[in-house]
Amino acid sequence: MGLYARWIDRWERKLAGRDTNRVVRPFEWGTEWLGLGAEANGDGPACLNRFVAGALADSDRFFSYETPRDFRLNEGRLTFTSALRSGDSQNDTVHSLWFPASKDRALVVLPQWNSGPDGHVGLAKLLNRFGISALRMTMAYHAERMPPELERADYHVSSNIGRTIHASRQSIVDVRSCLDWLESRGYRRVGILGTSLGSCIAFIAAAHDPRVSVGIFNHVSMYFSDVVWTGLSTQHVRQGFGTAVTQDDLRHYWSVISPASYLKRLQGRNMPSLLIWARYDTSFLPGYSRQVVESFRALGVPHRVVALPCAHYTTGQFPFNLMDGLVMCRFAARHL
Image (cartoon, rainbow, N blue to C red):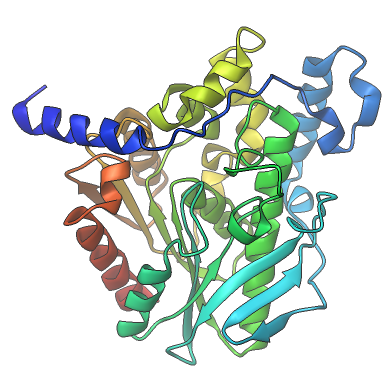
């Protein structure tokens, strides 16, 4: 590791160490979150295997939903009831901030895992300067949607396998509901921009919704589970699994919420995509990001690749945050 790489790594670990409220939660199969109830009866793996097979065989059904009927825009904040309920009224009320700038181009913007209520607000305002409207959505269990017993968005990514699937599915459905709202406002050129966890949610939503004409994926990996298993920022989640499952097991169970399962849905679509990864990332390991790039190339899906000279947390620090924001805004302005 060279001098620059060591400097980035020290900076990255310092930033990652600022959070002292990470909790190692116990492992759970979470089959009740998948509508399986007590069916597991001690055989979680068999139940999950059947569930995953069915979801992958008909992912259009799995991510289907009914458009919410209670969209409300008040002083720049859009709220509606999620089409997929979790049973927590606070989490089931979706919040999005609306930054209008254009009457024909708009992006749904998804911040990173554990982002606060101001996550990507600056980016949304920067998009406005490029003539693009932005609807910044809060993902499940984040910020305004966070249940009172939490300090972090632990229920979206945790060692509860079923609840993590349900949370991601809910966020994906919520994104598509945001697209419904934009369509009702007359927007016909719409895209999605997501960072880190938001990138995964954005990709799967885009893969299942042909209305998305541009995809901007900021930090990429083929499999949801690989990031959780190996990433610096998710080691407390990894500890929660103990020896109950292996990395391969989790990759299979969480394949239903992984971009790898839906890449081929982009073949033949005119959806330019921006793939951003960081050369020194210890949360989204570069090897996993390169797999995404190689798969896009092999499938002939239109895309551009940008490799940032930083790591994961440092992407949010100057000057890398400015580099990242500008490349995303320019791509959106050119292709949306």
